[in-house]
Length: 428
Image 1: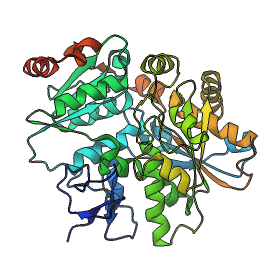
Image 2 (image 1 turned 90 degrees about the vertical axis):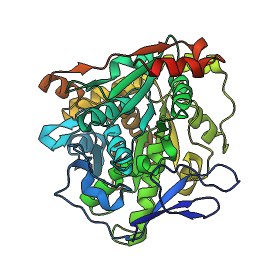
Image 3 (image 1 turned 135 degrees about the vertical axis):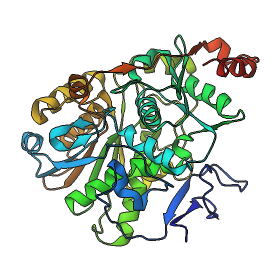
């Protein structure tokens, strides 16, 4: 018996997984598919590597050689400083003293193994991934380590984000969208490549394995705390992590062992690039069209560059708008100086560095406390989506992946792009 099926959140149609399915076949408005696990009992397989200890709620065919898994711990210093009794951090990064071994220092190391583990080992295609940085670093590291073919596309301005503690193998190829190109340009280029013979898309938020991999943060939190948190804080770029957290909450809420309360989502973006915050605060279920030049300028001015998706899954059925509404959630706009201050405060109190995106999440908690949106005795979980990079680079030699080719913005949008891609893929 299959351990799960895929179900369309709009029409309810169910599918057996072919390991690459991203969409419902019916002719209706866009909707996410969701994994429906036939055994709702949650257990932790401690003998499995890394995040695969949560294999019961992962849509995977196989496990991979990985070390990383989320680590939830109860804060003492930050809790005391902020006047909270039940503050938990879900740490996703590198912190050996906490048994945290994500070698890319980012929770994107939860996405890559799950997505790759969903694809059968005998599949001959090459996966194509677009990234603003952290996702690409995780896929490059895991694919190289497990000898899985990958073509990675990132904006050139983020090229220094693609590093590893081990030399990259030849099965991993990097292409950059050059100049002032951003994540959306990388997505456009990846779409062109993944449509060619022998290549297939990672799928982003539509890939159930990506969301269920990220959802292990909530599994770990509930298992560690012994109940669901009342409040969950996370910074978002695409919002996929917020969607995944709500899906994970629903799975655990349904099995009755982790409490009956509603987990409120607190999602945040880095000002001035805040399209989802603006839409939510205006009670809109879609994001108004963005001026491209203004969007690019806003992205260049944010501290947390990874939070820069111009086409997030906000309005799709089961997307960010729906999960915020279902959880009576809130959104926060966190300014660059607030992000920097939050990073510094966290490192001072918790004794480990965190990424800017995690600083956005921690900064949103500080705002929520000031607004009295959370109370002293509430159970609060903050997803620290990246941390310990200083320790990684202190403890290991670091290797950078060099781009095989650069595409300009004009080339990406030219009519001859398909031919140029074919030529390039024969050489990279």
